[in-house]
Image (cartoon, rainbow, N blue to C red; front, side, top):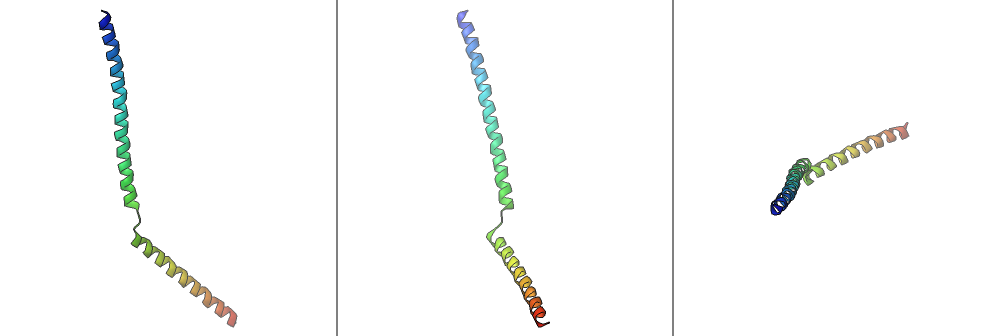
Length: 80
């Protein structure tokens, strides 16, 4: 009888530990899936070097055009 009680107690403890460990592995799988999704989103939103160079060139041309207009206005103001 005594062995049966110990067998039930130890089986219960092992069962609870297995349940907790299974929960941890499920959580690890969930986090892995979220990490993979995050990596995919970052790769999708990533800017390539060529795109960045094009954007910077356009911005530089815009500033050059604005400074040219400002210089023209200052020249007109000095003449008047």
